[in-house]
Image (cartoon, rainbow, N blue to C red; front, top):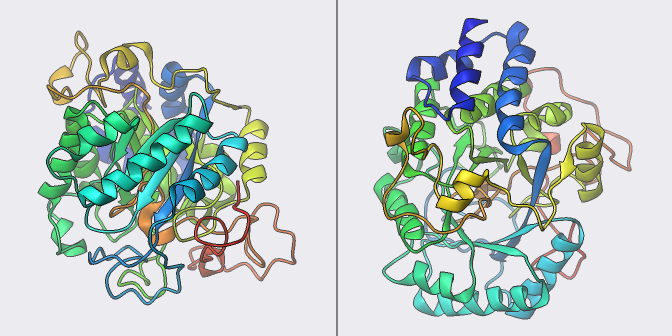
Length: 429
């Protein structure tokens, strides 16, 4: 297929595809799907080998959010039955982080619901960052606290944060249909603040909210221009009690095409499969590892994820290896420059990405979550596979429920998190 040969060549040169080429990836047929995965897999292996970076989410403050993001189970007016609690103490957050690190995670993502942190909140998170770093040598810490104001990114950096996550989520043209309490421009501003402060910028999207192919391409091209080190791709979990509860628009094949398109547009960037992978990719998760080089281990913000052991077995069985703490995630040219998606210097198309003051961290990863949340779209994504009673496509201990027909909503795979941070139960890591 000439299209795929062209995209592989461009990906190996870090050259930006055309919009038409990106749209064509999304429009490929299921008959061509394995060819698409193989082509994007060549680009992924060129820049990242067969390494998979593991990230672990700690939800520092759950629910109680004044924002109205339609996808989010923690939103204002949400009727989803999620855990709700105020700030975890630094020692409790550090204990929660230790569980993920002992399971093989390299990065801890500290997430808090809300519009954005107060200066007192930044002090609180700074103490948490220091506690985690003191007890875990070499750990990467990413903060995801919502919209940042003057000086806050710098203070987080001084406290030891390596990265900051704030997702664009969807295209600028459709953003107002998803959220009204803040703007697309507000989100762009926060990513730029993080970049300018020397934090590794992480920003991604949520697919499955009813957007068009054009919207998906728009947001991924906008992300390339923002130059993040990592791009988390969330797949919407239509949580009951949220405005998007009936939006079941994704198939495993569609998810793979979206990940391939992101890889072609952002070839040398950490692409992370974030919230919703268990619900929407299901038994095709191993194929997605040929496209993305990063995943979350265990549970998400408000929903359960695949059992941590199942994640590790999946990676090994698919012929990949967990990235070690002593390995640098990003390719050498990006780690040295602190650049982001598509910043390239001598390669064609360089001007699309490099963002001036940006730079900082080359730790290159981070969690992708929506709203204020870093990682698994705040809607609590990713339930099920082998992690809760009756749900699960890989390794559930109990008798499985009847599996819905192809194309039917998989509500059986959505489970609210009831363990880990904010509870007395051991976390899933």
